[in-house]
Amino acid sequence: MFDIEAELKKLPDKPGVYIMKDKLDNVIYVGKAVVLKNRVRQYFRKNNKTARIEKMVSLIDHFEYIVVGSEDEALILECNLIKKYRPRFNVLLKDDKTYPYIRIDVKSDYPNIYMTRRLLNDGAKYFGPYASSGSAKEMINFIKEKFQIRQCKNFKNKDRACLNYHIKKCLAPCMGYVSKEEYRKQIDQIIMLLDGKIDQIIRNLKNEMQECALKQEYEKAATIRDRILAIERVSEKQKVSNISENNIDVIGLYKNEVTVCIEIFFVRGSKMIGRENYFFDELKEMEESEIVSGFIKQFYMEKKEFPNKIMLRYDLEEKEVLEKWLSDKAGRKVELKSPQKGEKLRFVEMAEMNSKITLENKVQDKTEILKELKETLELEKIPIKIESFDISNISGNFIVAGMCVAQNGVIKRNLSRRFKIKTVFEQDDPKCMMEVVSRRVKHSIENPKGGFGELPDLILADGGITQIRAIKEALRENDIDIPVFGMVKDDKHSTRALIDSNRKEFNISESLFHFITNLQDEVHNTAIEYHRKIRDKEMTKSKLDYIAGIGEKKRVALIKKFGSISKIKEAKIEEICEISGINKTLAEKIKEELDK
Image 1: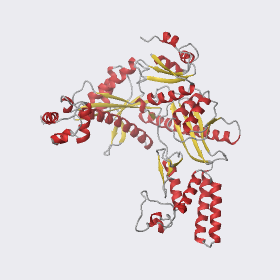
Image 2: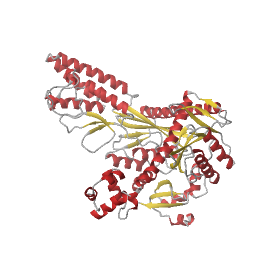
Image 3: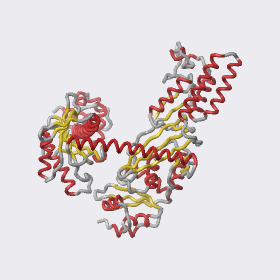
Image 4: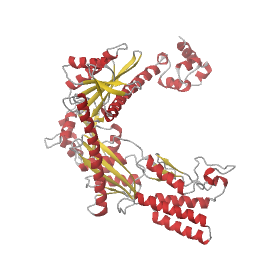
């Protein structure tokens, strides 16, 4: 039995990381402390805690801690543990996307340029990050349009030049029409362009243009002139404000009663090359500086490229340790700056304004959808929480169900649940639905603060009238009254209307159609994926699992080599013996058992 008060007394007076766990041993929060004894005790003392912290503390069953040598080490360990456990009460990025970069293999004799999402320590030059593949591709297309570098992916000598040479989009290094030195000039100009050294590249090009004019190479001079004009246009288009910094990220934050939005701008070479926004729910009571600290840890944890400075509004309590952590990762100095005036402050304000607009637009769109749904279905209140259910099986085998949740008009994948049917052993979807809904509502009745949370305001069934009536019967048995509707599909299996238990159809608008379809797709995918997982597990657990002498390692090796049980049955004894650990006697036994 874990005695929290007794364990609090044992806490050391040292830096470290603490790990809060619930009664199921799930990690619900990871934090770092300069002094573990002081920090962890604060959670269990009677003081003015926010509702969020109160909720977290109410779920803590026991805690662990790891002592480290310094606050720097504690920060690194905290980041690694958050990445590993993704605790529900930490600031977590919902999107682990990798950003696109532009790559130039400068070690090649005739380098190409292309987009990648992988940053390798391979000697190549990487430029970015770009907020979308579209913006990265736009820049690549511009470069290939205005600079005569090779277009082919696999460079090799050819018998004749391709079309790109004849339309003056390539210097045809494959034919030996350009020296390595001349081609390298093009690459150097591209690197200067991507580095934001616009003034320098334009000066170089103007000098080159004048030299061509003096040599009476007027066609070449005109090509260079057009390139200068194109670079000036694209540079002007990308400039943001009058920001003088050439390698910064700018963070803006805005929050309302429900959601926090963080907007991050990427500025490289005094140009804004992209932006991204992230949404965090249930953080409204957390201090802005704490949210930003958590965001920085999450966002830069896996980064290979770092800005020189990160601009933000708030003075962070962890500023020094975060700067050291970022600098160590970058291999050079990275600063966190909170500007007080001038162009840098205006740029932070612009990021904040954009985060506010982004969040307000999102909230407005979702609120309007929910209001429309209330009016369409003639509900008593706006359905803040909507749950949908779907059954999946093949001829009554491997029967499972999926549940997905939309909260405030947003599908919450972390709240999706999967059910393995326990009481129905044949293909009877209505009975399966009754079992699933009954099990689901009992979770909230018995533990309203548990993983399922409160009961929904609306239930949507991925099925017709029989499914609706099965859900309503399950609710009646548990003395629960929740509106239930079915999603009626057309010939293309898309939702065309909603239907109630009396077969009354409710036509939906295009915006509602998209919302309902997304919900339907989500619950369908949840059920299908779980069904596939169960089915694959059972199918993999074949006759091989019941043959003496065949353990996990040999079973995996057999499936990997032959692909299926039927292929193993068709294989020769000698082929089976090629697998490590299987001799002729065991191979004959495998064949004998599989042929039964």
